[in-house]
Image (cartoon, rainbow, N blue to C red):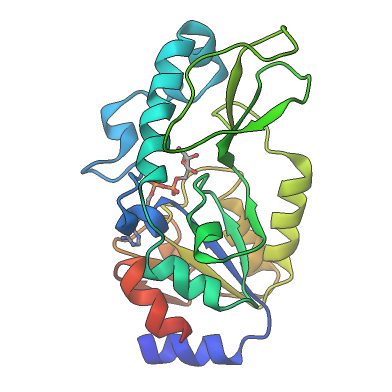
Length: 235
Ligand code: APR
């Protein structure tokens, strides 16, 4: 199976990687829906990752983000991140808001769900500020005075940033091979990028420890951990 996948990788001329929480899981960063340790198996996502949740209890939301930020800040990129970064020809589209692909050496990562390393105004003044993941800030007002600062990520019920989404669409509709790494492929519109790539003629290789919603569309499914499968696949 790995041999067949390598043949497809070697024949491809434009590769895009679409990743999710499973890529960072071997670094010790929690996934969302894994039965053991997934954030959404312990917490209600609408309380922690929605505008309604932030309106109801902003302190609770910022405390949860502080916990995740510290976890990411103390994590290191794994062999999967490094294997992707070594292939500078691969375009990175990720649902992950962490900075592990960048710390592995990727220069241009299309983060469709935003960037947990920054806070932004919850109103529309446009203020964005980088934060220290290892020493995350608490709840505080935006300098504009109109609203509090909140993580610069996309919450449930919010639209994706149009420019970022357009770049993700381009990367997935213009590739001839899409690697789908460590995602349950259940959250839309992001998961729709896989179908889009297929409709535009791309081959699909799925890498996941378990079957996922992307299994049915895969040309090849490699079952295993991203940090163990990506290095031999991309070497
Ligand atoms: N290697 C490969 N795959 C793995 C690994 C691993 N070491 N560990 C877990 N996985 C797989 C799981 O089998 C699962 O299919 O990663 C997937 C994780 O799924 P989710 O937790 O649903 O994460 P993701 O698909 O990235 O979630 C999408 O949901 O809450 C939102 O905004 C959040 O971007 C996130 C979106």
